[in-house]
Length: 266
Image (tube, rainbow, N blue to C red; front, side, top):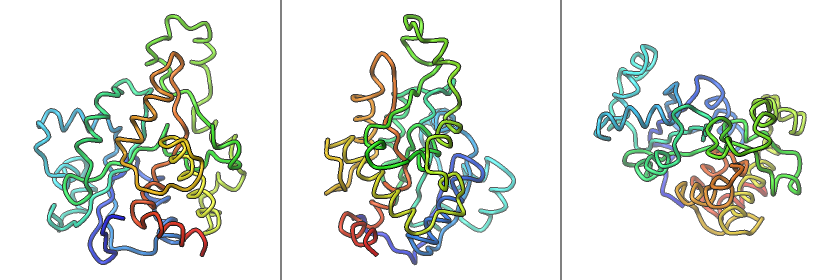
């Protein structure tokens, strides 16, 4: 388990303007407990963040970068500097269908954002935020995958199903249709719901990395998770990802293996 204190200031950086923060708020309410945290929005995909950092040769200050993104961030972070925060966490979607998407760029980003006390720690949801709700039961969730590249698929010119693939519903629609009914309403995410989702996603992560569908016995890096996604699902003629949310993995990093097991039994 990483040594984290609830009394030290945490900075959460989210891709989107509303939903991610709401999920973290619910996690804090029912599972994590209140920490001293500041939540901000980058308001763009991970690949746009990469483009910005690359232009600056990765010499940047995350707090100043956020201030420059919007007037709202500038006002909200007015009294803060990078030194104000003990920990920085970034939550972004895989978004392989983006016009800027590039797996090599994501590898580079995961290598750079690999420590919450330094540059920050990047967490990725596959394929996107709504993976957290794409769950019905453990049996079906174990092998649940979704197509991820769409028009970016390198094999689309040779695929006989390309038209059907391009016309598939957006993942937000799919995840809402293929989940337990209460999971479409964040207000119904009770402690018991979070316990079930965290258990499911952590078991899925362990299955992806170690071929064991059960709670992990050790922490796994985001780079390791992505490398397994590439090997097992993405780097194939019909690119897919194993559906996996970043939030339970963050919980595992926060509490550690034994701590999570205790929390799941409370």
